[in-house]
Image (tube, rainbow, N blue to C red):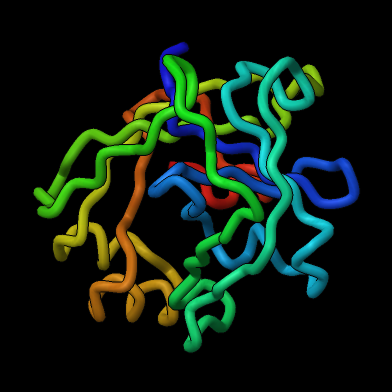
Length: 173
């Protein structure tokens, strides 16, 4: 299993986002992935290559969204699980970098639905940056401010790549 830290987040048995295991009872995701108000109706699937495939299912106890979350700014949340995660070869916490290098190649991993309608784990390579070229390429003032204030990154596909991000990719590491 290539990505043992991956989490699929479901609400009412539907995929609503992705996340990463950061500790034995915590999943890091985006606040936009957990927009519904009923924390206990969320579940997290771990250790699976396909959403709703074989893997471990955990119930969410509490969702902690950033207190300043509005729209895309401060779009981060922690899911506190009811039970500790059972680590195995296919279920492990992610290693979080403590520095950022501009124009870094990054890998987006997601269970999000593809054009065939399947929800298997897949990946896409992007370049993350915060430089002036990145800011100048953005058309919306709010997007520019998010980058300038160091609350986010420009994430661009390689030239000629046919890939994109969609709502059900929310929270993808």
